[in-house]
Image (cartoon, rainbow, N blue to C red; front, top):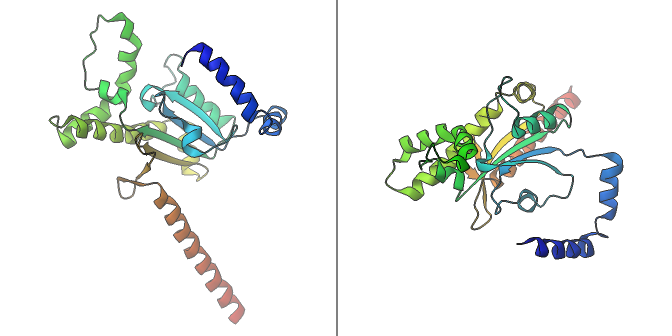
Length: 238
């Protein structure tokens, strides 16, 4: 999509959404943003956070980079966008949720299994950036081997989600708020071909359809309601 097409598309945007969301846009300007979720995703053009989640403007605070990597916390490191986004989301915006979303057919995860020449100056920053996925690469190779490339790439993508979640917990604000029960952190795995979502279940240590989260929440709510009703009954009977 070239610049000319984008300009024409912007006209369509104003025509279709200008009036529909005008009050929302104005409120977001007047009151400022207050998103509840930090969404960390890949820069891949096929991954569109607001579309995947059916979210409105102002709902998501988004960080995107190649491979949806999260560099481990390092106060001595050079300036980096993703760590700054994480700190701003937690310490300024006070988000309640962090979603880290990987996806199928990830170019970064495939690149982890290829050699980038050290003398290729045009790939300098990509080569350095990919080091944050090395652990996922090594675990995938150990888990499925290297013969079946499709299986290897899929395993790398999923291990990458798990490893980046671990990196998230190295940030002081994330670690503290998780310990205090003030923030919900979850890893997602998005299927480009059909739009399905899986999440990493740390208890079962596997990826499950994201809809099962709602089932578990409903079950927990029913159990809580049952316990509350029993308590009220016992108090009334005394």
